[in-house]
Image 1 (cartoon, rainbow over the protein chains, first blue to last red):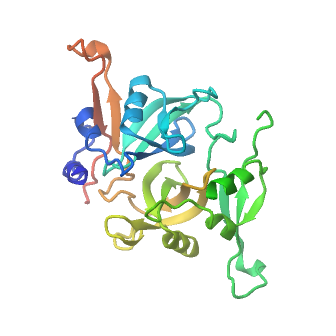
Image 2 (cartoon, rainbow over the protein chains, first blue to last red):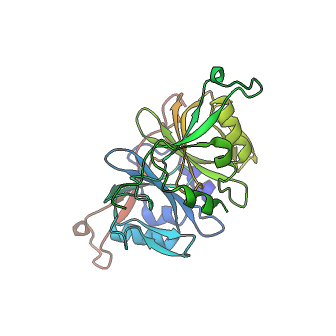
Length: 154
Length: 154
């Protein structure tokens, strides 16, 4: 099992190296054949988006150096930016401790989000102080604030 | 549908606010009732881990200010650090453009990874130059390098 494979490697010190193929075949893909991918701007550290890869898109990403996901809505390979030009160049791919998530650091051309925003995580949850809430049975009023507008050029 | 709900909000300018409850009830939880959560260090921007929340753990996280996940392996709520003391204080929670992923910026006490490492993404994929590969049928030799050791205290 993938979990046992990664457990056995946990004590490996920094600098230890393993053949990529032996690691890739132990990754945990879900029942749809997918693994979650966190995409982060290599320069700023900003988390740009979260999406999914299957084994084929993962291979294509490594072979081409361009982020290629699996589109769950379209059920097809999705080379990011193939129509928009908003390509993500892979700078580094990392695997997590139990082989069921990937972190990709990229150089993003243009916006990462399909809305034209720089990244996808533009809804921020805010809490108000309880003192501002007239209804004493509700100690917190919470809301979601949009942190970025769609650029005017879109 | 959640997707239509978020589509309708896409043009909302920065500063727009919505009731939290109306957003939370439109989040896309998967067939297991889970939503993926990216946890990022609020100070450094380092991505610490990826895990999952169900509606209950999400609510508990917002109510307590401490990251509470759903453990898929143990099938129970998992208040991060409840046994280890490696608590994650929620600084900000964000929702992505189509309501199917969360980004949580946290202050982490101690290591985030169960192995004792600061974060979970310590396997880095490296490519070698083709010139270093004696086998001409394989243009790239790739390997995975461990980027951090388990601390001596563990």
